Image (cartoon, rainbow, N blue to C red; front, side, top):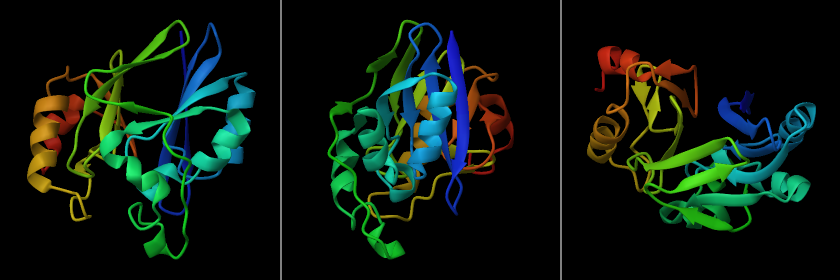
Amino acid sequence: GMILRGLEIGSIGVNCYIVGCEETKEAAVIDPGGNPRAIKKLLDEEGLTAIYIINTHGHIDHIGGNRELKELTGAKIIIHQKDAKMLTNAVANFSFLMGSKVTSPEADQFVKEGDKIKIGNTIELEVIEVPGHSPGSVALKTGNIIFAGDALFYGSIGRTDFPGGSYNELITNIKQKLLCYDDDTVVYPGHGPATTIGFERQNNPFL
């Protein structure tokens, strides 16, 4: 009952994911870092209506397309409260450092550990708090799939040298909150190729 599409956006290659319900054609867009028109085109191709824009965290490369995508779709913006100020503050979201002041509308809804975001009849995304890359970083789990944001990558982990980052916190959260799942759980990260919990448990040099 799930439609899943991904597209890579921008010069630093952010993964944006579209998760849709086959029955109701309602969808969530996870981390629209930019190129909102391409995202809208993909939604239209699948006959999907975006009801949510979910940001795994508030850095510019994950929220850059929020404003225009919301204008195009009317979708509600969802983020963890600890990263909420990044949406509306170009210094906090680092766009200012990259020579542009990009902001997003304010969040319509906040999520926290254990919340479930319902999409149509067939999909529930469970919210897992994994701070360390940013204070309000979350992962989203449905079935045996985890959208990990910038917490866990193929063979690597998210950067922790940004303001609000913590290496120890991130490692602890990955081990306690993500590695507790089955080996065959698929991980779709914010950058780079997909992986599995089992592969990272065995091969990730940081873990």
